[in-house]
Length: 78
Image (cartoon, rainbow, N blue to C red; front, side, top):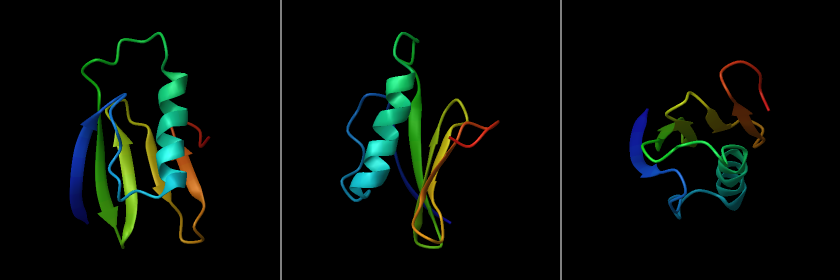
């Protein structure tokens, strides 16, 4: 695993993420409207060369082996 970076909810995701992963981040953030996320951060790590993006609430966005974008809120994959 390789550590990437952290950024705030509502901030610009790292440019090295694919447009599909960036769109998934924005979709999750859209579901958070109305909640106080001022202290929440995303953490980007790399596992086997693929990005894993985790929000402080436990939501995880990852790229599967087949290239599919998978979002998991900790209970049920989205």
